[in-house]
Length: 402
Ligand code: SF4
Image 1 (tube, rainbow, N blue to C red):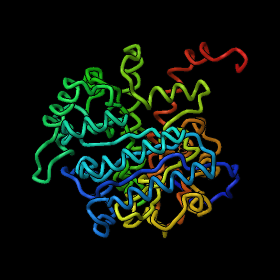
Image 2: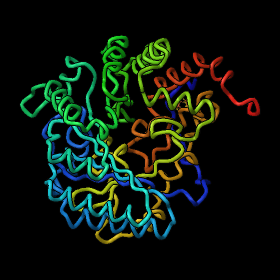
Image 3: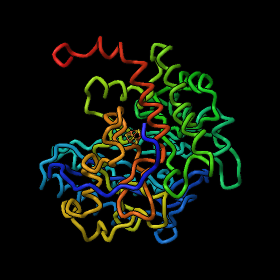
Image 4: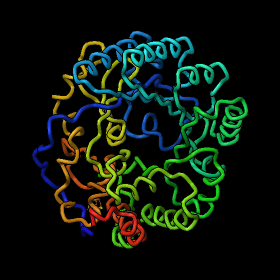
């Protein structure tokens, strides 16, 4: 494990030129009916929401789908994903949802596979919206941060009240009204204050799987250890220890709980190349369209400074294909080619790949070229995964690859 957090020069890009965008994140709104304490849109460094309209216009939504259509025709991509975000996307007018859904369907009818997911706080999943989402096969992920007493410390209304009970009611409604098929799962930010066994007990009772995310708020301007506490943090990193305990519990339960980070970590050790963003870190093939059409870098780089995700482009005037040539987008499309130099000899680099991107951000550097400030946590966790599954992986690995 590396001993120190060191600066590193940006390595040259060497990835093949065929890396493409595969996902657009649409900010349907720049407003929210919750005020979560850690929110990267409203409560960290970025203040872009002051500059953009509260709601995406129908023109911007239409232009986005039209640009995506051009892009898949130009590149021959068989699939392009949409992620509907905000703010809170369910606050977007229903008539605009209908318009967008019809345009997506036209694109699908032209032969392109277009998976669409919406990430919501779950407070406003009203019947007419559920009907529409179901009709157009738009899947829903619900954000919730563990059992009620933990969730309600961070996921609060603008008046400071917890949200868990209301979210639980709308999810229950969704299930009893026959829309269970659109629930893709739950999204949860890691909270080491939750005893791992209590978390797993709670997760086991959820009606769908769960993703547990590394915290997004840490970067070189906000380290996960307090000043002067690096040595003790290195010995027992808070998030890495928590994730490892969770993983041990998950394995012991004969992994009945669907936790994406854990499943994909094991799959990656077995040689799978399918994984989500917090693993492997070989590429980050998404761009964001904000409510006024401005195109931004992935949300992962929004938290470290005001305007950290900004680019000079707008979907109303820019082809997506041209974005591929932009230096910043190319860096993220070819992320694996820019492995921080400190990570080269790391025993878990195949899983960690330099660390979850928000932790690599540094206001003093043009690109996130340093290893993540969560390195100690990520090393601790990935090493634990590797060691605790070693014999199992060896037994499952195809004979030819041993
Ligand atoms: S690959 Fe991950 S764990 Fe290894 S040195 Fe880099 S950031 Fe740290």
